[in-house]
Image (cartoon, rainbow, N blue to C red; front, side, top):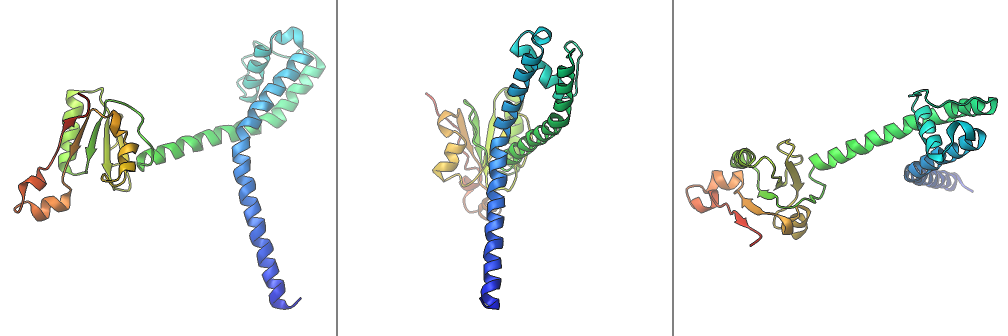
Length: 225
């Protein structure tokens, strides 16, 4: 095999290794939570088998395993036999690291969901909300007025901004083209109470004197009779 062929073979092997590592990482993330659950259930079964008089029920054994792994240790249940104490040491060694990884993954999931929400990539699943199309100063004023008059209603903004222009408890953001059916469905248009459409800032600046209807071209109509 020549030098070029050898180099090509090394690159191919390197790419194959990277792909394999990538798929293994994805697989590990997918199976971690089921494995963690099985670990807790199996550990509880062993604890109950070793000390049935201490834990009495399987649910109590699960409770003890979780408090032990979380290093809470209320002390209401504790192994009394040598085998039980040895098993507790094994839990400390093998389980606390798993709990740390579990907490880290949960925090990562919350961060990802929050990022998707702020970035307008999550579908709104509520009902009887107001959809506001187009972001501008008028949109902000409209939102403030709506929230003042009804503190329980949700508002979904549709625009093409990179992130949500406002952060409020009752405010949701969908990023996309409002003329696209998929975007409207992501904002759950069929279940909306009403829609408000504002002209964008470019229209307001360039066509205000030509056609005032474009500037004040807002539509608010009930979707349910």
